Length: 257
Image (tube, rainbow, N blue to C red):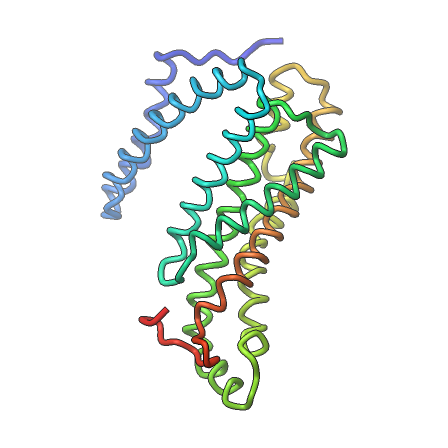
């Protein structure tokens, strides 16, 4: 079986693909040229550093190193998710709780079921997938919360005036926020294999793993991601919505929360 060959020369040639994005931004006056260049530079530096760090951690094969790397991934995912919750107090703390919970539950199920082993080479990549998807789901949930509490302000205020508790007055908003966080993952799983060939399955096949086994692993990943985004969206939404109300059950103005 032929293996993929990537060298500095082939990588420099594929940089032409980045130039396409820069050209489109320039032609359409999107103003994204600088962001694209900075993003590419950051990606190269981050991947290089992480690559060497993972090589060291995989070589150690120690439990404490595995847990330490998991903690770093969860913290960074929570930090980035919190940044997407601008205007929501304690968004980082809520994101950390939600991502830590989703990661812990999912990893425990995977380890105790025997699907993966507690080794850095298996735990760290899986944790990255879990935390990354949880981060995206929470970011979408936060955005929906901010937008929906603005759009439906009058409806919420009227329900509060009639004696409803914040949770009851916000029930539709909470449902839509959680749904918005989960929907991209559900759509992705719906079309897996038909529209996109998942990276994990393709990677295993490239590595020479039996296609039947690669398919089973990808199905496991699909189950894992649905659970992850559901738990993360649910937890973050139900923690964060309270920041839109004061202690007297009054809906705060956008500037106040």
